[in-house]
Image (cartoon, rainbow, N blue to C red; front, top):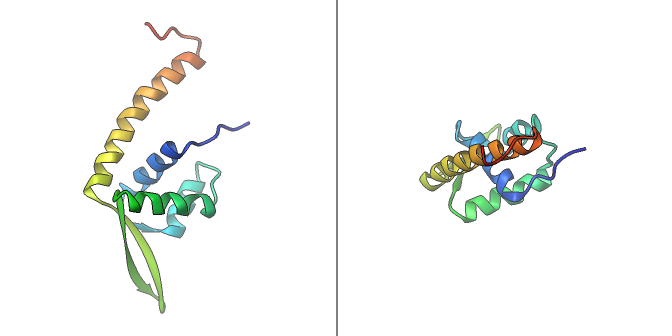
Length: 106
């Protein structure tokens, strides 16, 4: 059984990976695949959406005669990443409390 990854959580994961440094699509996909069952066809629309929202930007680097598209966070993307991390800490604590049978009012 698996949990469905909603778009905001997927965006948070992408921003978090990119917060560690610029990277290109293949490496980003492989990094994500280490922890999530995700395909390139799922990831690239997320990257385009984040770019449209000006949370990341791209640049090309020539490698062996071909252009490799790199992604990097903008200042807005860095801030959004921090926001997602804060929200995740709060959310994950609540879910863990429920799953472990605790009381949310404690």
